[in-house]
Image (tube, rainbow, N blue to C red; front, side):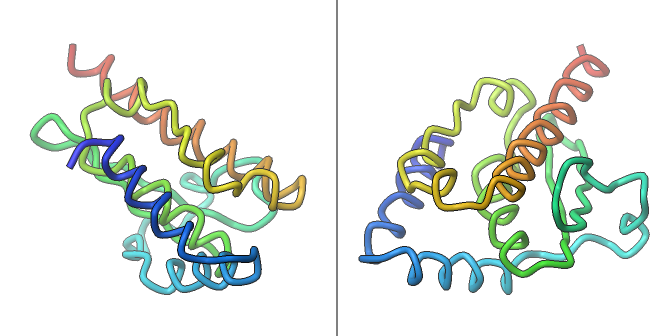
Length: 140
């Protein structure tokens, strides 16, 4: 499944819910299914700056693709990073760098987050794209 197909799948899932409380509950459920980061990466060196909650992100590059793992001390943030990982993990660096992530606007997540959580979302995206740029540079 390519990035657009994965994004459309997420959009379809969010359209099943009528109000934002149900969508928040769904994001919380996604947080509970987040594949956890190895404890060795839950250090300051893997913390994403700019997030209200603590969010650790690690990326591994193998066979031309990046695999992300993450954790957070806030369940809603776990759900948000899980949405990003679902779209961006197991992709090439170029796919990640080119991903417009328009699904985030289409599901309305940015407008329903507090300003600090919205800033955290932007920080998570920036960090994931920074990993992609770094791996692309190292392997070209």
